[in-house]
Length: 304
Image 1 (cartoon, one colour):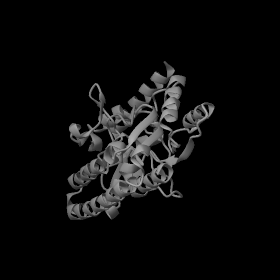
Image 2 (image 1 turned 135 degrees about the horizontal axis):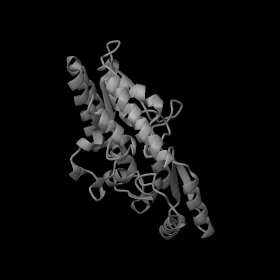
Image 3 (image 1 turned 90 degrees about the vertical axis):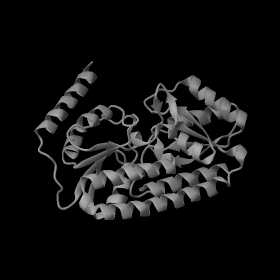
Image 4 (image 1 turned 180 degrees about the horizontal axis):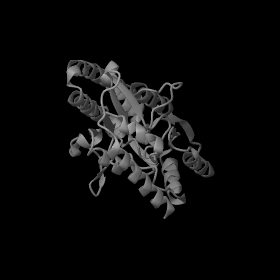
């Protein structure tokens, strides 16, 4: 009850602040853009270039499924001329707030603009939000960002279009690289096991069977039966490697490894994958291109 009260109080304060704030304006000749995830922030930086100042709410290692907006986020959203978020319920409880803010200023959910026939439906008109793991879908997110920037800042349209096209070309090169690398894994070993079911689009794009311990959201609970089910699957398929995720505690996958060991099957942790967040500045995964390539290399080296 107390948690619900605090949540409602935060929402009310947020809406009051938005109502009192004046219309945003472009500061220092730069468009002020706020995003939820680092993946979307990276698109904005690539397409917007010198004309944007980007603020991301969810930094390296932050799980968007469990993220709760803080009081410090209020000013970041107030100052924004334009806001981008993923949508399809990736941001959990933040969705209601972002939709309310959308009544005051441009707020774009990049995943929700994609044709639903291209998305993975999970039942009851719900869709897998992890679209960044299909580069062809992520290209559509780039186009959403491009158009959003042009709508708010049309005087720099030519630059936005040029930079978007350059980035789209880089994405296609990355897609070609991923396909060639995945071909190095024998077909019977193309099984990717992770902490939660974030890699469905990746599996569909590159012909890999994907099995997650938890569901699409890390907010869902997993139990002993889930661990046992996955252990049985690993032993039956003689899978040699499973993967932890940078934004999910590794204890869940460690429980699976120990469960397999108890059944006399040695399965290794094949490495850390970046699922719902980019890596930090010190990592080799602090941009979308580097993150995706890092994941491909880690998967291939452990499964081939």
